Image (tube, rainbow, N blue to C red; front, side, top):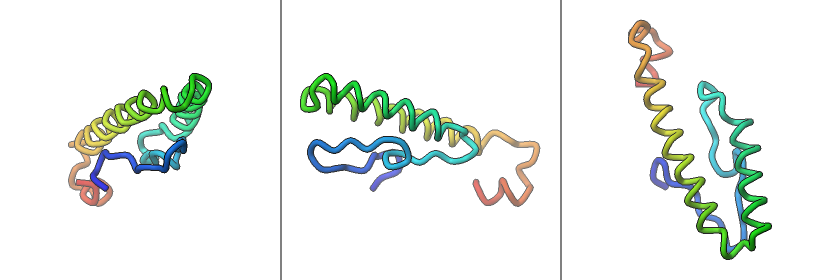
Length: 91
């Protein structure tokens, strides 16, 4: 699986929360993502899964792409401590 690509599930299966996309603890987005993806999945199911599945997948792919951009920016950002072991391991 490529970085930023969401795992594929079988027909009619919607993954939510960490089953869909696990966030780095530094992002502090795990709980929010779990609730937001559950809400989006519920709307897709309510609207008729086959009609809404593509929209749900596109929404979650966009979330993944934004997260990866912010994650990269977060780990590249702290120049002040860039020589410290914690940040060296993440470069």
